[in-house]
Amino acid sequence: MLTRLFTHRLLGPEDLEPSDPRMKVVGVFNPGVAAVGQEVVILVRVVEQPVETRQGFEPSPRYDPQEGLVFDWLDERELDFYDPRVFHIRGTGLERLRFVSYLKVFRSRDGKTFDPRDSGPVIMPEGVNEEYGIEDPRITRIGQTYYITYVAVSRHGVSTCLMSSTDLQHFRRHGIIFCPENKDVLLFPEKIAGDYVAIHRPVTSIRFRPPQMWLARSPDLIHWGGHEHLLGAQKAFENSRLGGGTPPIKTPHGWLTLYHGSQRREGDPGPGVYSAGALLLDLHHPKRILAQTPEPVMTPQMEFEQKGFVRDVVFPTGVVEQGEELHVYYGAADESVGVVGFAREELLSAMLKRV
Ligand code: MAN
Image 1 (tube, rainbow, N blue to C red):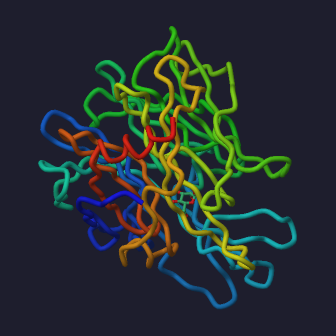
Image 2 (cartoon, helix red, strand yellow; image 1 turned 60 degrees about the horizontal axis):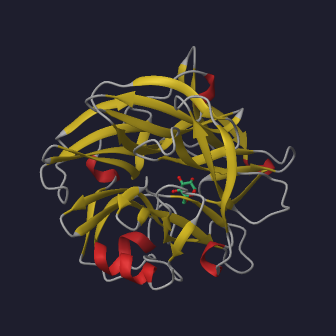
């Protein structure tokens, strides 16, 4: 495990008013991050749940493209409750979310304190492919434009969409770039051998393989092909899930990216323990993994990482380079936003020993 130079809890559900009087805010987490001049801008995922309760029924909220926010009341007798994020519908084997998510901008002068009043625009779900919410944005600056990948959840599954912005105040949607089931898509900040490159995570219910991350290439950020396998889960801390975390940053030694792994709890079908690992990829051939940390670089250890909407989660989603330090922004316990500081040299030398 790496030395944490500092850890701060930056924002939590108590900092926001709900978007609708029928809702309460239960989480503010998994932030996309960008250094903009002297400021740090984060685009957080806000999670809300209905306030109303009804005997024998559970509400699953969604944004109907015509009617706006509506609740589907599900009969409790048909549901399993072992995951705080979803209702499992026994009859169909399908799932519905217990919440709905949207995105919101916050700005900070020092990147370590965020005043909840200093917030920017809200991005709400739009259209049928986003009806169950939009989640987990990642920001990559390419040239003068910020590109944001985010997860769109709907009755058609979990897909990844693209948005762009030149100021992180106004956003343009470009639609789905990876069809269901695919999430945790990270864009590299520059073209490699003439193509844009992304890390992505196809998810399938057919279990021939452990969880894994893939690479893809594109001429225009919209059309993706040239798919290649990058990394499959091997370590105990990633035996249940594995997916991209922070958009890669360039170092003299290679592309540095953090990923998340989840370890299942024996005999418990609910969410596992989420930790973070690190990868160093070849600058010219990113499919070549130069180094991987043998153990997680961070695991849930602070109280706000261990207790929350989903216990025991650290989920890194962005890195800002500050001199010799790397400031890693992450979701904690699916409830709040944290930032942790690492010494770049300590991380790189821990990894390079293994090349
Ligand atoms: C999944 C996603 C994330 C979430 C983690 C931990 O990977 O739903 O948004 O943070 O699980 O619950």
